[in-house]
Image (cartoon, rainbow, N blue to C red; front, side, top):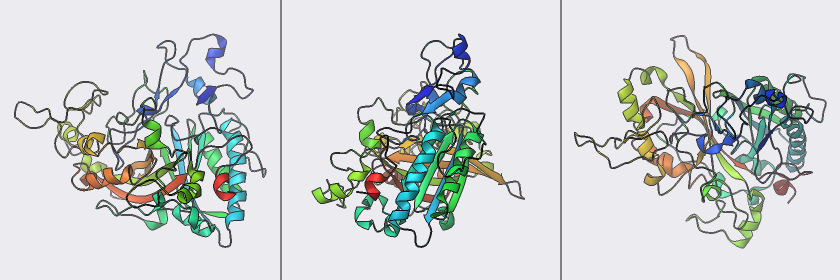
Length: 444
């Protein structure tokens, strides 16, 4: 949920002066990929018009505010922002449950005012970087890695959904840039606002936690196109069409852990319902979700040597408008059995969109919400660029893993990407006023 206000709580932007504009509201269904589970899933959340087709003035972007409190943490169904930071921390030697609880309390106290466009609270750690800006759709999302539970003496409350992911053939993982005790996702539509939050949270960690790794990403800025549209990834493909959509009846079931049975945290290897004791141990995840995070490098020099026709057959969608090769528009469902005059399937057997589609994976789906990245150019001119892939699901072993296993066995896109870092994090549900993120785990 978001709202448009200026920093004094009054209606903001040009619209306040009587000029018509579109209110920016996120369409999470546009915020992912055409199924690029392996990482080519760039794209930004769409912005829907509530009144007319007049483009939203850029001055409205800064006044858009995401809510800190709620059933779920922000940054999951929030529309993709223009700038993002992913950062993992390890607890310092000697820091345990007590210190972790104090840190989460401090972090929550800092994140709440920042998301409202106010100076960072607590510790006097506001740097003044964002003094001239509004909230700019800032979101801060917190998660816990597998090792966090060992360091805090909470192994009995660690869900099996945090078990290590199986290895995949495209993995070239750097352990130093993978995993972590604590994970923070920051997103905003203004680069200074995003950096401001990153710096404030880093300083608030103090001696309790040390940075393990940090990555920076970006997406298309809202208002940069003549009309709201799904963005493109660094391969030039329109991505964001195939995400689950909030209006779908099973959206919450696929993405969030329900309160009734802590689904996705079962101790049973067959995925059956957890025992009453197990459900109680994992009740702190109710309303939460699991984030799979992968740094996926796109081998752009190799990709760009392909003709557009070949690129389209690798993906299974037209490059110009994102429509499936079986015909229609971007939102037309794929006809996986349709053949051309030559008898060949229009969407090839190994096309990425086909292999990753829910129809080919027993309905397995996840909410892909990535950022693109570019970390420079090597001496030989090769760009270090690709996707900071983040996907959300109620259980990664029912969402990410089965789809990635299938992609691993024959995806036409695999030769053009390389997974270089990985992590899985338990992201608890949202908080009520007066609570801090993770309180039900750390004080339960």
